[in-house]
Length: 178
Image (cartoon, rainbow, N blue to C red; front, side, top):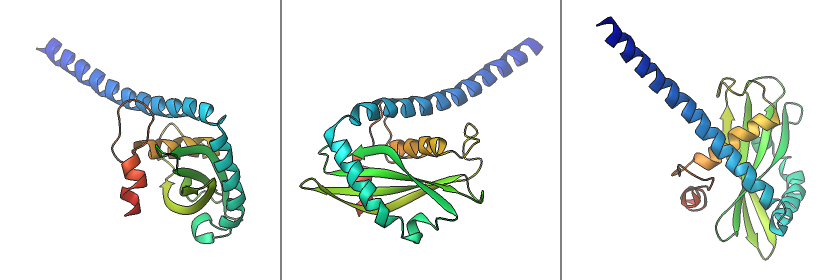
């Protein structure tokens, strides 16, 4: 009886540990998948055009304290990530935000971009706020860690595909506009 009970506990614990580590592994798989995709995308002309136009626009946008805070309190950094729709006429960008007073771990502001004849218009959209213990694996609130969290959120909001690193286009470019 004691052996059966001990075996049951061992099986139960291995299932729990397996599920937990598998969930963490799945998160890392999505992050790594997108990082590989981003490397290829960064050499494309469209990526460069959108990023350069956003950098110019962000100089003006960041003065809006509602979305980007006061410079003495919040540090903003444009993330390298861009998520395009299939037709590449719309995109999502991320502005990473780190608080100087340790009030929260970090924030990520999503920016919606709409392209018209090689000209892009950018507007602030939703944001993610991460508490200090949002994920155990990210103790330091570096821009790199905030970027990983934000990219993972964009990749997994809406209907998540178990494999790959595509976003739910309907969720981001249709549903959230309504």
